Length: 388
Image (cartoon, rainbow, N blue to C red; front, side, top):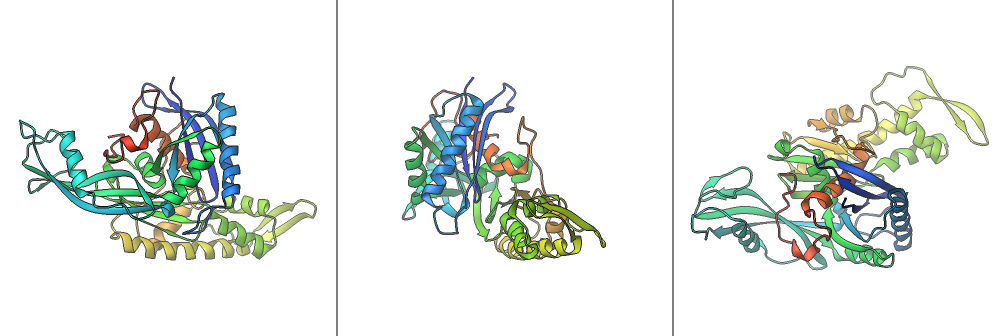
C-alpha cells in the first residue's frame, strides 16, 4: 500500500495528513497532525521559528499515528503566497489524423508562457476555454479533429520566499518538499463537483486570520484575493467585549447559531478560577453578527470585483463555515447562492479539512501510483486534470 503525505499551511494552523487510497478511489487517513500557530499577515511570511515548530509537531504527530516515516510531502500554497497569470496560447495540430494529442496541448501551453514574475516559481499551468479552430468546446479536446487548437492558460506561481522557507525547514527534518500545489485549487477540485466547475465557481475559504476568495473555472484558477477577517476575529471580539478567556470565547462561538431568536435568554459559562456566570445572548449576538456583517461586506466587494452575481460560492474552512446558520447569513448578504459541502471521507469529514483532503487527492491520484513521486520540475507545465 502506497502512503502519501501532505502539508496544509493555513492562516492559523498547520495540518499534516498521511493517506492511502482504496481500489475504488476512497481516501484512507492513517494519521493526522494538527498544530496551531499565530499565522501570517498579508504580504509577510510567517514567523520562521514558530512555523518550523508547528510543521515539525504536525508531521511527527501524523507519523506516530500512522506508524510510518515521512520522506516526501506535497505542500499546499496559500493564496497570499501565489501569483496567477492568464495568457492565451495556440498550437497547430501535427498528428497524421489531424486529431488533438497531449503533445499539441503541451505546445499550446508553451506558446502561452511568457515569463515568470520576479521572485516566483511556476508550479502548474492549466488550459481553460478551449477553442478548436473557431468552435468553443467543453471538456478535454484530446482526440478532436481540428487544424488549430487555442485556449486561455492559467499559470500559477509560488512565492520563492515561502517555497524556500518551507523547503529549508522540512530539509532539516529529513523531509523533501516534493511539490507545491495551490491549496485553493486543490480544495475546489475536491469539494466542488466537476459539473459545477465546468463554468465558474467562487471558493471562499475562511480560515483563522484571513478569508481567501478564488475564482475557479474547470480545473484552473482565474483570479484570487483575500480579506483580513477570519475566525479568530470572532473569538477575540468575544474575549474583549465580554472579558472572557480565549477557550470560553471559542466555545461560545462554535455553539452560536445565526439568525436565531434568542429572546431574553442567557448563556451560562464557567470561567476557570472565577466561577459560573450568565451572559445575555443579545450581547453575544451583537458581537458575533457585527463582525459577520463586516466580513460579508468586505467579501461581497471582493467577490463582485472577481465575478458576476450569478457565479455561485462554495464555502469551506473552519473560521465561518462551521458556524450554524453561516451559509444562510452569508447568502443573504452577498446576494449569491452559497453551498457548504464535503465529500464523505474516512476521518475528519469537515470543511475545515477541505484543503488538506484536496492536497491528498492530488498526491494520490494526480501523481500516479508509482512509489516515487515525480519531482515538481517534471510536471510544471502539465495540465491540472486529476479527477476528470
